[in-house]
Amino acid sequence: MPKDMRQIVKDAEQDQLELPKGHRERFEDRLALVPNHRQRSNFFFLKIAASLVLLVSLGYFAINSSFTGGVEQTSELPESQFSGLGGVSPEMQKVENYYLTAINYELASLEKTSENQKLLDDYLDKIGKLDEDYKRLNEELAEKGVNEKTIHALITNLQLRLQLLLQLKDQLNELQTRNDIKNEDSTI
Image (cartoon, rainbow, N blue to C red; front, top):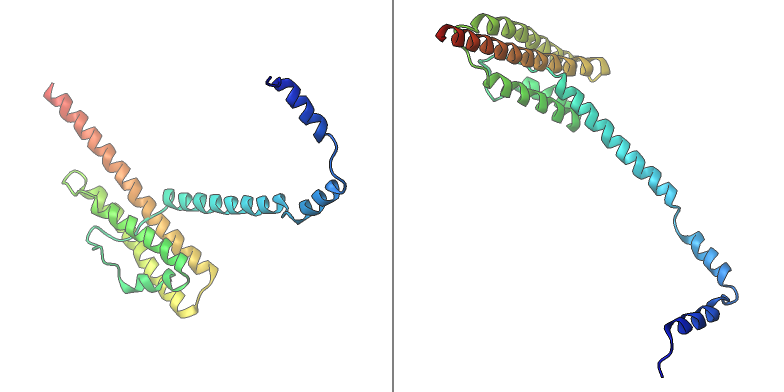
């Protein structure tokens, strides 16, 4: 006749209540060989923290950035710009390329009309002055060598140009909205 499952489990529990001799010592020896999980998690935490700092920094630069050049600037960048931050390190080359690409994109997306001509000219003059400063800073970097102050000034210059372009774009959108409202009012 088949055995009751409850009886089988009770019998198995009674057989396994006592551990073999030396089991606890062997287990502790093996446990000592396992790497400490906390040490690994600390490094993992540091990797995550470093990634977050990098992302926040890039986000800050993307939001507060200024781009260079005038509307007439082409997608090809002068060689002097490539020898600037790119000569410092590959990471700086990426930062510089990011800003210059964004600046060129914003410049290419600007539309010149008779209503926004004066506003465009004012902003492009400011951006042109920053572009001249950027070239001067690149020359200074080439002459005096790498120093933190010049690198910071170059990055800040790029950020300011991007900020100006973004402000210009906001003002152009506002101007366009006002013109659209005037046109709607005059047609009614």
